[in-house]
Length: 237
Picture 1 (tube, rainbow, N blue to C red):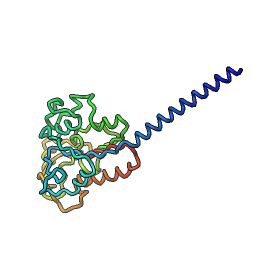
Picture 2 (picture 1 turned 135 degrees about the horizontal axis):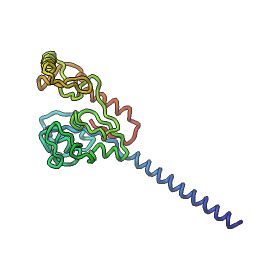
Picture 3 (picture 1 turned 135 degrees about the vertical axis):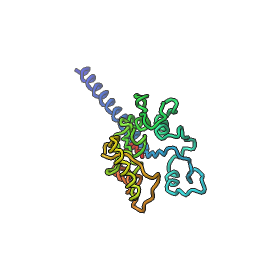
Picture 4 (picture 1 turned 30 degrees about the vertical axis):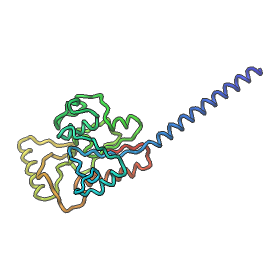
């Protein structure tokens, strides 16, 4: 009887020790998870480093310089290809265009490399909540498996690089749309817009959110505030 009681006591002790060890492991994992940094990643393609943060004394870029002073500035991040899809694919897969075989604006890297892990997908696979917004990958060639959430601002086309406010540009854009419709060559994006362009630039005296850059920034700020208390957030803008 004494032997049985002793065995039971030892069994209970072992269970308690194992339970304590498990709790300790879980607590350490939770602490480690909580101490991992949140990440805001802003990729900009095909541009030179003409910013104050990169030592340009002529260009005035106080906001991006302030952001750079609180983050990490990559001094050897080179443009891999003078085409946005190719360079963004290179940046977000870690492979050169010669490896990805992406040199145009139509080919999705998943067609050639279906199993490759993209940068936001890597974070997602390792416990981060990834949120994409704007042109992280090419506008129309997003990587759906990379995101827990992918956001878009209502009222803007799927490819929002041709958004105008000035009346002359809107007329040009509408005329091009009508010509495409007449020829039967028009295609609607998933938000009901036909992609056409007018002048290459526009600077209307309107609020920031009338253009997509401002509107998506407002959405990004709103989303980050919503997720402020959530750990392991990886946000791509």
